[in-house]
Image (cartoon, rainbow, N blue to C red; front, side, top):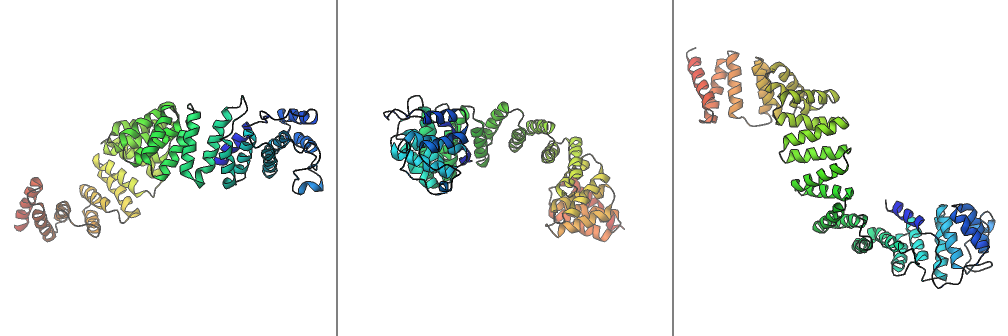
Length: 436
């Protein structure tokens, strides 16, 4: 990412003659600069090599290191600068570095030459060499009319320092932000470095400033930070602002739905996720919607959504469980039993599903299945008053009265007055069983 930003800056810093330097030579150099203005960089390079008295690019001598003395206008910093500028555009970064170095040697106070040398070094991946060159550049003064290049120099310096000296990079980003108060990029970049270093409060302040300027990258970082810190109301606020600026962003609407769901605002969450799904149908969003429909007791909608999920991914045990529960709440016990059976077959350790399967099977009068489900659950979880009662009624309906009696008694002992209606039924059945 950084290299792309740097080359963009490099191409913006055009040839600029330093103040106080000798008047620029005419004729051949002017011809070369006219070619640069026309972006005819290949022809300009050929012309400039001749101006500097260097071997032509196709000659055998061109492969040798360039001499920094010789014929032509070899001591002319502008010619060297122009050559570096042409070669940078031609993708000849090592040659451009060599040319810019000569321009800097000949004119040490020339801001644009130092800046372009630093950028070329960074473009080549030589960050350790680029940093001191750019540090020197920001201490110099751009030529009149090119003052904005100093902003780019600080920004480029910060980018170069990111990997080698993050704290110094933060300071450089702050300086760039001072020089470019309308540019949110330095604020976001400084915030990223602060966040990586653990300075979350500092990062938040940088992001808030940038987000206040309408920067969507800063808004996204705030949402991520607030989400990690479980500061859901703040995350919701910035997600809404982000969505207002990016109404076609499906991911933002989906994230807003997730945050609203985590806040317990299920209806608002459903609305956000439905909007996202209408824009671009996504199985993940359908999955989240299905769960919210179920939690909100919208059982027909939950069943329809879970059916789509299980159709898209038949191996999704949780989706089969959700569909089974949606059917169960609608008292469609046969469909519920079938789906819950699918859930445990795909995930034998799915302890939560076994009780629901047992209940659905019992209501479907499939008592052997109910007992098998309860036995499977007992291998994963301790018995509860509910499992004892369901096992007792299943045995009772199968006329296995001894086992029914045992489980009714276990239920009464475990329930201890917490389920008066079922306890009344259990005592009533025990009396009836004892008379048989």
